[in-house]
Image (cartoon, rainbow, N blue to C red):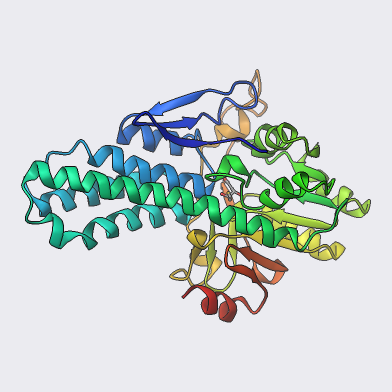
Length: 355
Ligand code: MRU
């Protein structure tokens, strides 16, 4: 059974598996302050939309339990400011603001109970409420991943060849993963999938994380460079493409790791089904279309220098390093959620299930 836990709260400490050290080292890192949480998300020490949401929820909790507000309004004000700060670490994955808003909403819903308590009594009760909410966000994500695994597996057959991009596995969630959940589940049931993992330039989540996670689980995984997706499809080795999502707009356009949309376009050309795995925490019905999704731009040194002993580009060369792209809804065969499989037309069918 798969046992990878990217975020855990143990012995009163928030711990993350530092994903920047994988696959070389498996080391947990304590996040003890809001700055630690912000930096860990920004630097992708913890990454993947659902895992970012989970760590942000616990992050807000660890910051807030140390506050010494004079009264309720002051407390809410400090929660709001901390939440805005944590939310500014990365813009694309909606799970980040979703989890922080959910924590804030929970505390606000207890106003009648909290407002009239003394400062220390209020904080003791707020501590319990916030911890319980962060735990709920984590366990609900685990359950959602498990359900997506079951729904996703119903679309696959033993022995299939599967292409995936980036890492939407256990490392990116509370447990099991989104698009890797059916692969882990299939592995337990002897499905014998042949998985092709795109390396996922420039930060190599496919090479460093997916290849590691699937090998650890005993899955047959072959690493390819991103520009090899077309040849493996043409060779007839791919029966389905499974990817995760960072934010799905109301019309079914889905932002995911840079390069995902190219894979979707190829899949359409070769007649291969393209499945996007999207838990409800990643569906943003307030964002009408993919054009409204903010796309994170990252440091160009990730393209020109990182991973190489010497820079592999002329000093000072211009770079463009968007971390995500949007796959148009028309390329997505189906959206796998924890509430079921959604087919086009997405505007109507997502709203039916999630509004
Ligand atoms: O930049 P990252 O590594 O956080 O990007 C992650 C992805 O694009 C994942 O596919 C997505 O967050 C879904 S994770 C279940």
